Image (cartoon, rainbow, N blue to C red; front, side, top):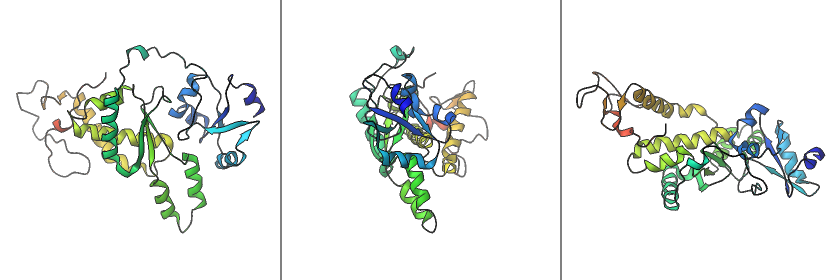
Amino acid sequence: LEQYAETMKDGQKNIYYFSCPNRNTALASPYMEQFAARDRNVLLMYDDIDEHALSAIEAYKDKQFVAIDAHDKDFELNLDEAAKDDDADGKKELSAEQKKELTKFLKDLLGQRLQEVKFTDRLVSSPAVVTSVLTPHMRKMMKTLMAGKEQDSATDSMSNIPVTLELSASHHLVTTLSSILESNPPGARIAAEQLFDNACIAAGMLDEPRTLLARLNKVLEMFVYQGAGYDYASGKYAGAAAGETPEGEKTEAAGQEGEAKAPEETKAEGEPK
């Protein structure tokens, strides 16, 4: 802690830490992006007891301990500038009206899983993260403490705590999602659900990843069809006669039975390269 305090940025009031399984996981996490871009130190803590201990200690020499995956904290991003993003000048950013429309769409779609949607500057290269009043590591610790006969109910209660979805207003996935809300609602719903689940995976909040398989198979189907030359706008393969698709072709989503309609229902417009 003394070494950390000596290397703090001028004016920095917080000691930042991250509870994670290992160093590689930490460095790949979206929560680390702004700190890495600013070359700012973060304490990495690998033992389950660490975060609980820090919450009891609270501070070191008047410097508050702050988890980088915490909800609604001031990460003092105004103290220094992030490394320049070469693509920043060409990035499109959502307008206030687009943010409002996307927020309503996500709240209607995700329902009680969401506490709120907010647009954040904590992200550099990732589209989204989720945060909560309980950090992911603290959730894990509470589940452990409540394990036993009440394990199922404990898991359910922890999983049902709503989270805040924080979005980058300039990430191409977010801006493209906003552009297809009206033109392709089915595709927008699939993309939004997957965006949310990806953020939950990054936070370690997804207890059963196998629940994603049906949607992942649908996303894979869309990718493969486009790779095979399927034009979602016209509803046919490139080179096929007007209105024709290969005989016996199916575009069913995982878990559905029988032949489905042509995959025009999941066409995506304005997809980035």
